[in-house]
Length: 424
Image (cartoon, rainbow, N blue to C red; front, side, top):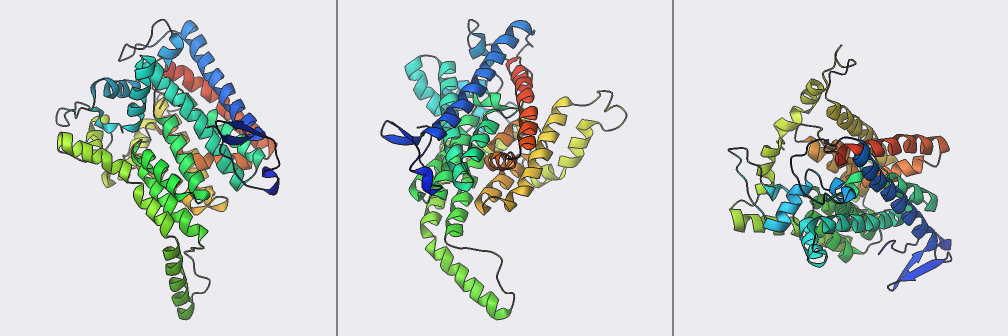
């Protein structure tokens, strides 16, 4: 499935449609999604191919994939090894005391799908890349449908292109979970927005089995359902009688939202199932959290408190900074954090409460580990930010500015990633 059918304006149903496998898709939506998908994936794969020929390759920590296919090989880097290891050997705990890393840090849905497809292709790496590319196409379809509901077709077209051409969008092609997770996030947003609670519950639960922040979609479903029923936090009157009336009204609204609340309660099933497996296999249902220490992440209040000081230290502000005596990875991660942090602050003025809460929490969770490391990749999950950028992009100068920043950085990060330089 590429683009779910939506009903944003009266002319939606009068526009030309394409029917495939029993589903109807609007031609304008199909054109926008396929253009964004094909253009950006062709760019990513072509840059990987050409740069692998003309730019010397850095020595990688692992040697695998296909030496006879430099494009496929260039998409199998860093965390791809962990997913391959899970597919081929299952989960292992590692050893926190000796700092031996374990693959329990990685959630099961993506490697499970890769394993299923690998049974057909006979190649784990091909299967991983296929899953990522198909998931990206689905993600763009749902993003278009969601953005069209909130704004219009032109904004939706920009949104899918912005996401597909984001600086670190090479991860959408690589053997990583990014494409699958974004597909499930956008699907959950769309189904909640259109009050299809059973489908929102299913995609939300699957997202919770894909990444640790997937469980936050429970808040999306609950908030969206209550919002549709008229739930509001701020009372219209602050007088005692007005406050009492407001509380009673909101309680009634919550009761009327029982379908969405029930759907929201189902989302943690994906996480709980993984925790049950970890408990049964290793005796530690929170192993996916405890193992983070071996990856240099301490998800705690102390970690969050050290975020600013750690970042400043790594940036090495002072005379040496402009002489290049700084950590370039920290520079780009910090810029990504600040840029998308600004977008998160601006979200409440244009998008729905559920969008705002999910995006803010998804931004804050990795920062709670006390480092901005990999934020260039994590911001790909902040789907509503791309919707907001697309809305601002109705002004030509904003659109040119976004594309002028995104496309060169996309090429830059693609070369980094494919050449074994850490890109996020």
